[in-house]
Length: 471
Image 1 (cartoon, helix red, strand yellow):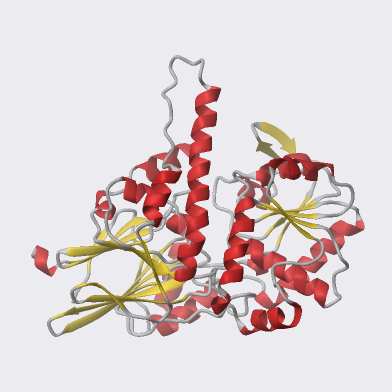
Image 2 (cartoon, helix red, strand yellow):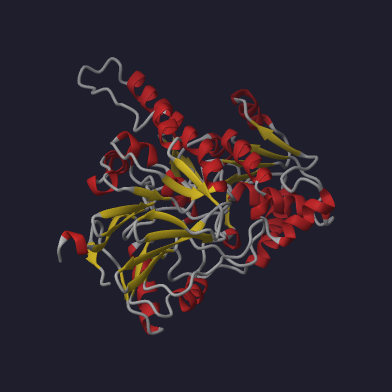
């Protein structure tokens, strides 16, 4: 195959792992990158992966971003810092969310590097750490963002167009259709992004792309089933009432994007319906506060239920007993609260942020409850809590887990096995190949098996694998 005829797909990230999404498509002598996410896992491995952005990625002509979650967008500043000079295409809501998220991520990188360097200042063998990227690097990446509406085709380079359709996963999330024309041939490559679920609050149901020739498909829950989305309010109400009956606090480690807003909306709805007696609720995350503002500005993404709630009751993301916490001193004061209260705080996997302080102060009291409302990656504190380890290390100190740990899997924003197969039955009906990515190895392999059983040709690419496609 000559360079001018190349049609290749490379899996630079999220191959047999959940985080660090990054896929590269070469069409003739030009190429595009889909996502440039931050890999999350063991600190040393994560640092090495995130600093070493593949050359293919840097040399891409354009980048397409499926959504704002850090495991999809978080390494864009590194990409630009290493030399990428093209546009970054995404939806309008994703662009606005990334304004807050990438700047926040940069501040975290800078603060972590500063803290470690100060801690080891007296060590003559310590090599000073540089942040992965700075806020200035984040701003340079944000300057390359080009926002688009859903369902509007736009040109990438000669003979190649793209279109975003609503993936129903988080605000602004998209599946991407890349259409390629070469002489008499036409091919469509679909990148699923993270696929949402039907009947979730706030967002519309996913739009399923059709007529794909090749599909790059997420597999996060490739062999798992969720409780029905319709049951999430009941799960939440039961948990609150259980903790309230024993006078305990409820700590909710939550992703700042989408999950926090979903929980706040669900609490608001339960109170409006008279099913939940008023209870103090604190959103202790400056980033969550900023992202909630973005939600208020993008009602075009809302589903009919949320629009109706807004019309009848006003702001879906605000109610009388809700307090948004920005200042550090106000966050510390929450440790002195008496009686039942709900504290929603980042990070969602309990690896950093204010929630770790709340866990340290609450985990050893049997009256309290930790509500897990999202996916917990391997080697994270959140995963150890889900696995019911009797002791966990927090800030380097082993602590007994006496608080009740309850998992509310109805809140998952990822499609489960059956929902993924339903999505594939439409999108991949005529596909030559489905590539299972963005999942732990067992989940990718399981989804591959389910797809093959249903008659699809499927594969689980290896990290860094490059596949020649056919026109």
